[in-house]
Image (cartoon, rainbow, N blue to C red; front, side, top):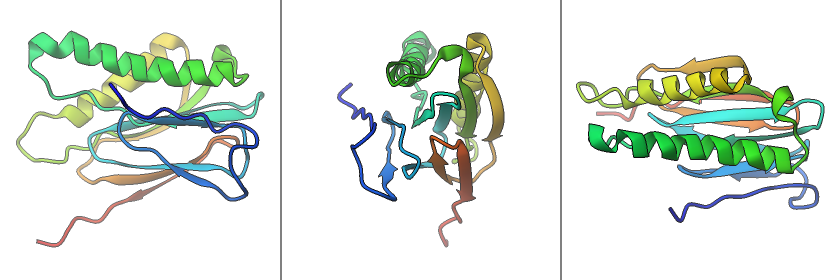
Length: 167
């Protein structure tokens, strides 16, 4: 797919570092000063962390709006995006059974078109439940884009709704 993947472990960044991720990307960090941020419309960001290991990360995933015949492939891509983040956290010292999540995004950005945002949100929430990962909070749906900021070590998350563009 050619999308960027990154791991921001000890020593990778300076104090107060902000890392922006785009669609198809993820970031993982064990540095308390690191904040990961993204902007979401119909996409969903899963923010995962292991509070004992002191490591966390965020991804930015989208279920492409493809014909039904390609639905299985699209779901596999989403599943892969979630597994890549989970595996990166485990590689950084997290344990799957201690992971906790916060989920954001899934807005309906264009009235009258398919509700891909709702499907994205449902996919992530269902996958977390199947994997036994506790979801501590979620902000899904609506009609506005969101800017999400996540501090992966502390688990603190902040969302700001993005104002609509003037007509």
